[in-house]
Image (cartoon, rainbow, N blue to C red; front, side):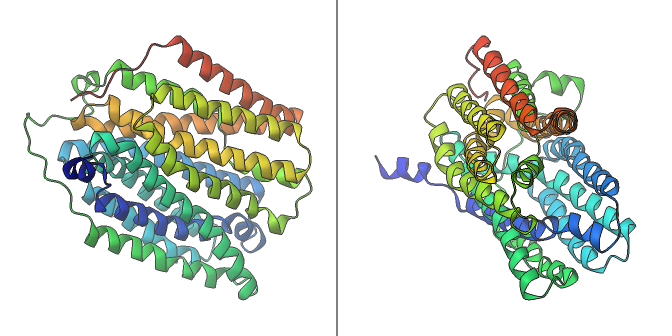
Length: 398
């Protein structure tokens, strides 16, 4: 391998910086989010219904905002500015959780935090595609996702340790979350230089009908596959419910998310790298088979140890597929419309996740946890069937 070829295969510094920005912000967010439901109920006196409404409204906000932030980043031709605004909004909400006197402030902070997430998501993903050459793009998405997930399990571990250290002082723990959030914004501002992209065509509104027609059939096929796939992959909250149902003590429930995220972080980068050399459709089918196995383990195993095993397998499937779907979007969307493409992809995925979680909750209440995970396995089989019926997707457009 020549020196020039080796240099092309190495990940740019900007990809590593974006990964550590995600890691720091995820540590901050997970410190708060792993404690927030308990804080709302035990300290602020919220009902379970109110907790559900707050979380549901927050999670519905981000994918809607992602559409417009992605389109705007295409229209402006710039990604970094919107990413800084998005991460900055998220950082500004962290002190509010520590200072909030009531539910109204928590709701406002939670919604603002998700607006920030919606603003930054699509431009950040498009920025990864701009910084990485096509032949290493899968590894780039995999690395950023791995570092993001490292933060997702460090955060809950820090929350548990700090709560034990400070004898359940929620406000003090929430103040700690301010530090990594501020560092994330600082690192993004100082460390990322957006690549110069010469404008070779007239700039148009990226969400116009003419612009949307430029998104290929291959791209819309990826969106459809991702939506059906998401129906099989409902909220990880049901993993916690399954563990509690299996006898795991409440204090130890975050361990389920920790082991899941360890499996996720360890697998995301190597499978992202593998996606640069392997047919994406075959790798996605492999990920679906792994999710199918996880669903069956979670459906059949009644003890919390089986939930632990199923959660590890669940994390492995996330590592195999999460970065892969982002790579497939980048490979099937025109370069000038990548922000819009990621925005619509995330919107459809968010709606599908809401529907999946609603159906899972209904099944859980009506027929119990086993049928819930059997339904997830059925959606896996449906997605595999759809992919087998489709032809090989088109290559990346220029």
